[in-house]
Amino acid sequence: MGQNLKIFLYIILSYILLQSIVFAEEQFQIVQLNTDRSHVNSGDFFVIQVIYSVTDNNNKLQGIGFNIHYNSEYFESVEIENFYEYSVIGDPLVASESVSDDDSDPETDARIALGWASVGSPSWPWISLPVQLMRIKFTVKDNLGYKTTHFNITKNSNDFRYSFKGCSYYITMNKSLTSDINNDNQVDTVDAILLLQHFSKIY
Image (cartoon, rainbow, N blue to C red; front, side, top):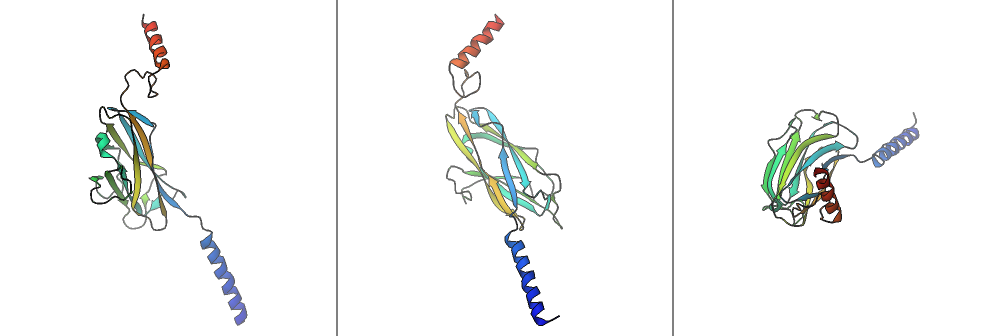
């Protein structure tokens, strides 16, 4: 094979390789927070599902570590339920943000730190995606008044082949309205009509 032909083939192969790198689609490990409620009354509770997914559905990665940031002043208690324990790195750590503020949000003052890592070859989370990593039950303080609070997600670590995406969430809290019959966070004529209908059936 002539020298010129070798150089030509080398250039063609290099170009093909470069194009495959440039046009490769960026893949993400994604953590998002889900709940069926956007409003909650003071004294009540709501549950957030922490859902993990991957854009290419690869369920054999090295693991992931992240923080969930929130404002502890608004909540009476925070409870973690249905925790996914496969390849977990210790128990969830609940701590204040007095030392660092990774989410750069002055409205949050606490975090839940979580991490999973596969041992040996990449094998996490090993089950079909998306997967629920846990449920977090937040109990709102009594007589809180109208507040909107954010839940932010920041990365500690993830698989080096992937980018990370954390989907923030917010919820609105209201002072408890005992006459809010239809649970739309306001007391109006609709509630009065529903109340009259209720008593007309009783009597």
